[in-house]
Image (cartoon, rainbow over all chains, first blue to last red; front, side):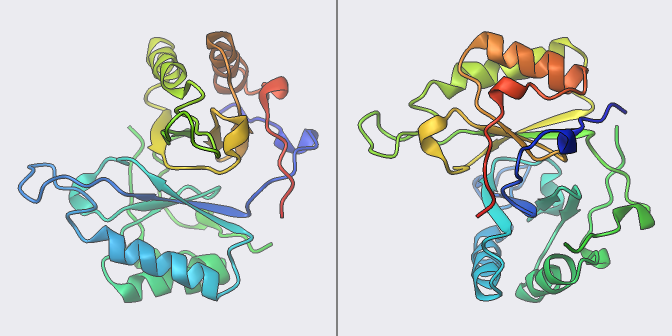
Length: 118
Length: 118
């Protein structure tokens, strides 16, 4: 694996972490499903509110994304630089991601989507 | 800075790198501008074609994103896990990012957006 030596260049990093949350919305009857149809929006709204309420907005970026794949297990979000994919289903799941990952630096293990590299 | 110890858990990573490319399209007269209005789409089309042509599609994810901010310097894209933000303007810039960063593991330095963390 080639590594880009970012540290060798004076490029300040904007965020400590950057969340991309799938905003894909397909019709409810679409065979692939979608994060939108699976109820993503209220969860993302809560996540953004919690990031702001916890004073994390300056270090945690939050960006809407298109389809991340794996639509059947959505809603899906991914946090970089760790590259951890989560599938929250409930407001409590969002709180767990905020508490464990964003504040505690620990994986919210039960919410991780385990994906084998193809 | 808290670090999540991803390596301590057996979560295979899906991609070696993951590109998020801004697809925001505002009207040409919008005061903020947008990556779409700055000509992003043909560049992203080329980037995706080059990723596929170079046989990188299994290791480099490419996902559309919403607004990444800094709209005046777009088109903007970010590559994780390095967290490097690029502002390609021409097809040659796209080729440089593919050759230097994706294939060579070197920053395409002249295309990096240097962003101070707020």
